[in-house]
Length: 154
Ligand code: HEC
Ligand code: HEC
Image (cartoon, rainbow, N blue to C red; front, side, top):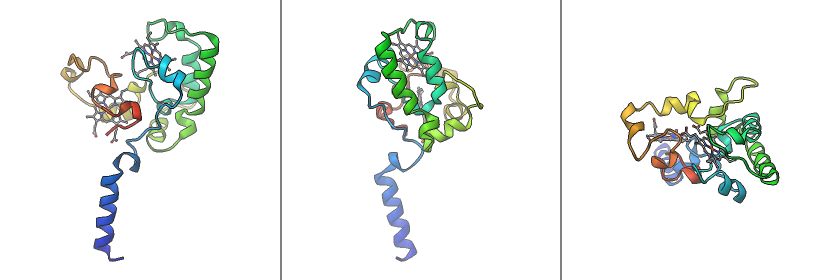
């Protein structure tokens, strides 16, 4: 293939599959219990943003979840913990998940996606943006990423 044709083809492929082509895709939540129980107060965040041990810690402290009581019956807690840890960032360890994991200290159990340096690096906006009534908080991913629930962060 001539180099020019190849470049055109590569560009076309990138334009057609921008989301899956690289680092702006995060495997979405496919478990109905997680979607339901962890998607009422905020969107159900993709497990790939935190390592498994972070999810274990979070699922063990739902009665004090960022100042809210998000407790669930044991059977549901178990289903959700299993799903989140099986699909955690250090398990996926690819694309954006791998980038986030780079910044997690060995043994560290961060609880916030929005404090990861990879997040901070991509979201250096003036305070007025975060105070916008349509945004309100950094964790409101869907305010700016319409495909966030499908794992699309463009
Ligand atoms: C009763 C409401 C409620 C429920 C239910 C709930 N959360 Fe949250 N969650 C919150 C609040 C409030 C925050 C803090 C939001 C903020 O500071 O912007 C939060 C923050 C988070 C964050 C950190 C977001 C960030 O800033 O990076 C994660 C991760 C998270 N929740 C996961 C879960 C999981 C997993 C479940 C299901 C087991 C769940 N949440 C269920 C209220 C809830
Ligand atoms: C106020 C709007 C806003 C909010 C809220 C927001 N983002 Fe973003 N995000 C952006 C913009 C704009 C970019 C592109 C920045 C760039 O390319 O430098 C971005 C980039 C990203 C990227 C990198 C995509 C790429 O192409 O490399 C990821 C991943 C991401 N956001 C995840 C999240 C997650 C997860 C949340 C919620 C916890 C969130 N964002 C909340 C505006 C926002």
